[in-house]
Image (cartoon, rainbow, N blue to C red; front, side, top):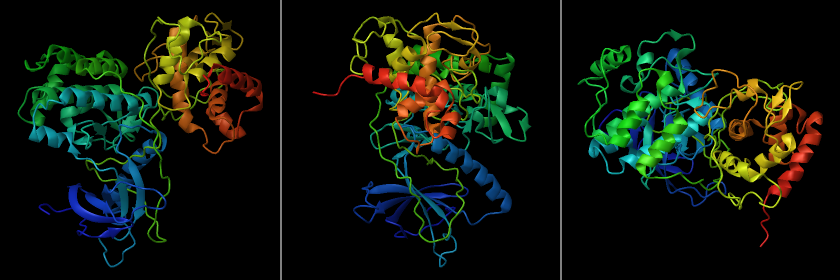
Length: 535
């Protein structure tokens, strides 16, 4: 090794079914090594031949260090527990070392991770302005949008925290600064990378819970990153990080203008400028950003990825257990049990009755007009009376969520059960309006497409263009919060959660009695609207 590793592990060291090979990266409190599988099948599951092992010395460190590291890992564990996205590095397993003869390793937690080829930072060092830059930016933006849809902020987006896979695709990494939104803000630790920090946060007040940030902080960071990838320069002048920080402050005060590189193509110049607006309120929304970046990159919309298995087991090499802490390395910790979904809303909302348990935010696209009565025919019957003018809204709202349970047929069945597709429904006694019977105070949390609740509560009449995409966002957010052991049809349980709340469904261990008639209607129409798979 050419540099001291936080956790020195000798070549050939065996951890479970893995043999340590070459070192990959190190941080202050942990190290990552390449490892090879020594068994054909591990506990009945075939795993990759080569992985990355992340060693975290959970039994060492000062009390203050360990307390801080536990707080960081709790952020990541919470995100991985709820958020399932294909743009995250996959974690296969966790192990605990039981080796008293090696005190530096004894008690260490080992994360078995999908092996990346290198970081974006390494690529930019070797090949400034890479030809694949636009496509990588589209994938990075996709991952960022996935986080925001789920109600999370990354908090530390930069080239070192983007990993590149063997096929050249990009994955977001290092989520120890990530935080879940609580209304319009989230709280992150009081440190970040200055070059990628928006000016309003450079000298912001830091409270007991950390620094308050919004999703717009990630949008600013993406603008800086995009400028760096495409021009090999930062968008703000200065030869040092401190100088660029001062330039950002002057720009935010209005005493200096943004001077983007003349090498930046015009379409990207407009995107970067909108990311780097002086105030958070003036920055482009994440959803709009993704559409514009994909257009600029010529990548089009990314397809849903295939479902992948997850090993939920935690393998312990001995009876001892350990508290997992995280090291600030290029490898993030994540799980990948399904192709995604806007999981992560920590509190449900009663979309149907207004008696919900609070709400979190997500995102989606806005309304689009439909031009074909066959739109989405493979997933939504065309002969069962679903109004043609709502087909595109219904199908697109389902496709914007990668949770497999959120389908066009489910959304259509719910709209039929809620209002019989009546966009003018008005029930002032219950406080419910529109085609999806939204309570306006709850719809406020889900109506916008940028991961931020509306500043004002929507007022009736509530349009289908507002209501239908919000149904898809809501279902996508609450699906991971349903108890996975609940009996019954998961789609029907989702619908019952919309009409009551996911907490009430979990507490009732199924459909609550008051929602059974509604759930039965949804189940009937769900079957009716779902195309037959028979040949």
